[in-house]
Length: 133
Ligand SMILES: [Zn+2]
Image (cartoon, rainbow, N blue to C red; front, side, top):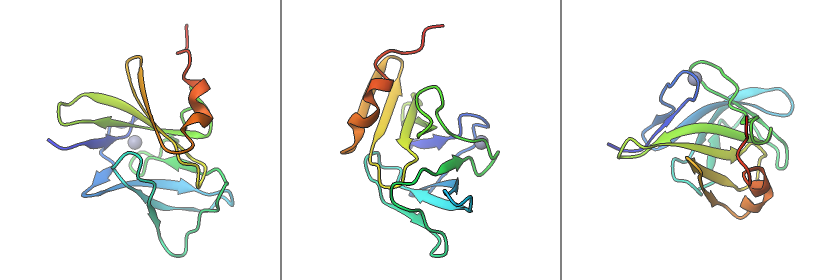
C-alpha cells in the first residue's frame, strides 16, 4: 500500500497518482486548484496558467472535497495541515507553509517531529512544547 494524503476533517483522499490536489485562495481572494508533490521536501507546485501565487504572500488552503480550511491554527496560522498514511498505515500529520516560496515541511507523529526544507527553522519554536490542556 502506497502513501496516501488525507483531509483531517472528511478523511477524503487528496492524492491522485503523483499529485496532491488542494483548493487554494490567494491574497487577492481568487480561488484555484494547486497540485503539490507527495514527496516531502519537493516544493514543485502546479497551478493553472491563469492562477498565480505571489512570492511571499500567504495563501489559504482548503480540502477540495469538503472545503474545510486546512490552516493548522494549533501551531501557526501560516501552516497548513494534512494527514499522511504510509505503507504500514501509520498516520502522520504533515504541516507545510502556506506562504508562497517558504520551504518548510514538518512530519509529526506522537511527540516526534521531522523537519524538511531550507526554511524549516522558521517555525520550529512552535513545536517546542506540545499544547497542555
Ligand atoms: Zn475534507
